[in-house]
Image (cartoon, rainbow, N blue to C red):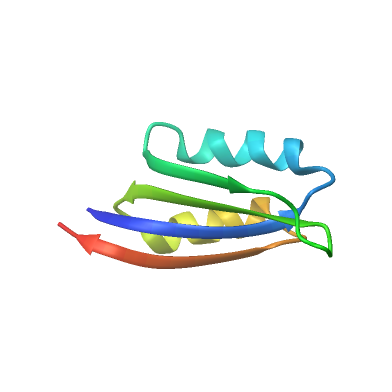
Length: 79
């Protein structure tokens, strides 16, 4: 089991549709989450810590959901 930090950048418009699908994917595994306001280009940022066993599988699922944004992953700790 790993604690993983996800850094997600997505367009501010249409963010609600994506967030619903995103939270359905990681429901119950979120440890911490922060929402940041949109920048000058209109992209908002979400940073969340998730407890996950299969990080590659999670990353591939998130990339299918988030098509117009960026997803980066960083492992914080392994247990």
